[in-house]
Length: 163
Image 1 (cartoon, rainbow, N blue to C red):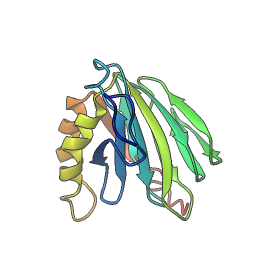
Image 2: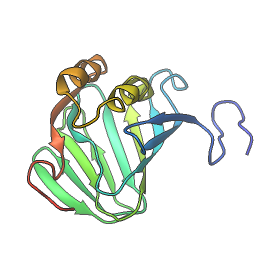
Image 3: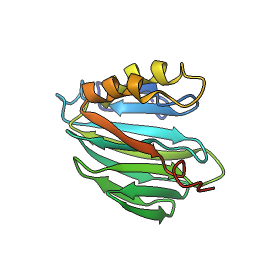
Image 4: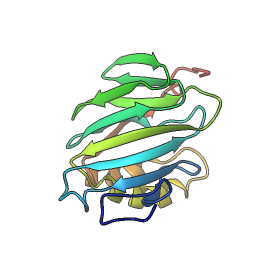
């Protein structure tokens, strides 16, 4: 499907960014397209992977876990979710999630306000440069620049969880 304006995109069209190596984000719409109000993107996440515990101090987030089971942590509670589950993460919530499946999984995420694509544009090259656990002293300033904060490890990294 051909792009018509900024509102109609085909299945493989959009702004491609990366989270960590092997995990792509396909932004269908960004804050640049919505006067800063909204981002909407597809995320491919590897088995056993997920972001570390973090906070968005200025953004609401929604996550629709499409085709795999996930574990999510929000403000000290954890839930194991079936494929198709949806989560709203309010501003200021400590959160992380993890793909519990055996295959790469897809999620749809929104951020409001938008411009999270700018974070990933700066974050991906830095995270990809580490040959081991990333150094929080290097990542913290990037997170802070975008109103995000690292507050702990990925799910399972702190308790030996095998999922």
